[in-house]
Image (tube, one colour):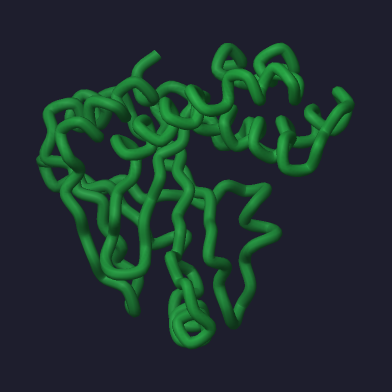
Length: 197
């Protein structure tokens, strides 16, 4: 379990990161293409793993010019929980709303969307997501939702085996947002790396 968590040694200092950044960004963009799933007109899900989280921490450290171990440790405490353990999938749910009118229309309608995502396996079994606890406390409100949520799914060994057979669908059963998308074969293959030890 702890083997997947990032440590200080995994995070390059700013000068070292600048040297590797272009190549690292290209690798992560290619990785995210396989791990991103559009869900209806305004939502998408990016399944996170150790590399996508490392990129997030590196970019935060770069943007905020973090120089101390304490600052980096603070970021790791925030983002390490997004790295899935074996038998889990972890994702960022994005509500891709780009203008004020869309935000005013959708965010009140989609309260609770962070609990509405299910994975439907080929045999019809469903696995419901749960919001990432630390982030949910900050993001959940009664009258309006946030445009970014962190969620995870816990699968049994039998469900992982079924997932590996393909035919997996990501769906939202939110009353105001009912959409589904079949996961591409390359996405299923990619996510098996998270699910398996």
